Length: 286
Ligand SMILES: Nc1ncnc2c1ncn2[C@@H]1O[C@H](COP(=O)(O)OP(=O)(O)OP(=O)(O)O)[C@@H](O)[C@H]1O
Ligand SMILES: [Mg+2]
Image 1 (cartoon, rainbow, N blue to C red):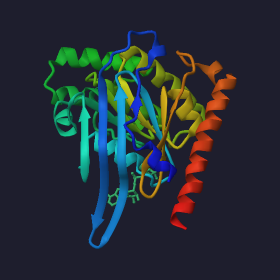
Image 2 (cartoon, rainbow, N blue to C red; image 1 turned 120 degrees about the vertical axis):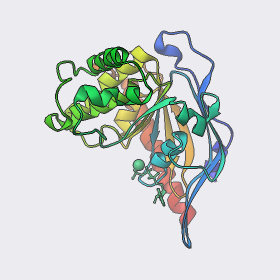
Image 3 (cartoon, rainbow, N blue to C red; image 1 turned 180 degrees about the horizontal axis):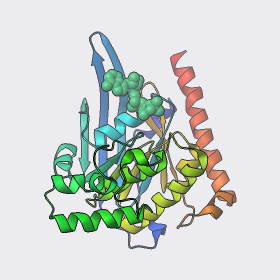
């Protein structure tokens, strides 16, 4: 079975072309990770034999058909759900200790904001929990809101903002405590194409500026190629990593990137990898 060929340890290398000295350290490491959901007699093998290392500064997209385990993988890294077996380290610690140390920020598909808190105070929330002094909280929240181009909206409430603006508040909040790792589960899935492309550019700017490592779940092949240094292709039933595609397009990416013939080539490569996996999955189960 071709999928087994990928059982060897896979390393997502440093983003060498980002114009900064690459750090050798690995931010996320998954080894022999399995995840089975059990509900009475029903067992769902959500992930099997996941081997993946993600180096500092990489922008990694997870792509694959619905139900292949992308969200589960992200939740395992974030210690929001336990593994069935295997090991996960984040910043050299267990995923659990990394969560307690607040080594990552997380952004979900729907922005989880508190309607009774202003935009500024939503962004400050993790800093309040971290007991940062008020002046420092305010300074950081202001800086992060400027980074996602929401300066001037500090005193607004979430319900006074568009969906895309709310998602940018969620991104600012996830970045406010300067996490080494940003986990994002289809953060722009509900947005129209124009807003999505704009937010993609803003996210890349934030990534370049902060040097954070990003793990990004998406259903969109063009979005995965545009944003990432590496695209991880997954297959369903059970979820496995079947391909890791290096996206060696120049940085920083911009609107011209989408017109680059190499961009189209990579989009086709990811699409073919996904299609190949679909064919194999259909064969495996027949
Ligand atoms: N809490 C849970 N209890 C039982 N089964 C679950 C649970 N969460 C996920 N699963 C199962 O695990 C598998 C992977 O689900 P997951 O949500 O990770 O997929 P996904 O790739 O994120 O899909 P989508 O693209 O639709 O968001 C699916 O078969 C799903 O039914
Ligand atoms: Mg999902």
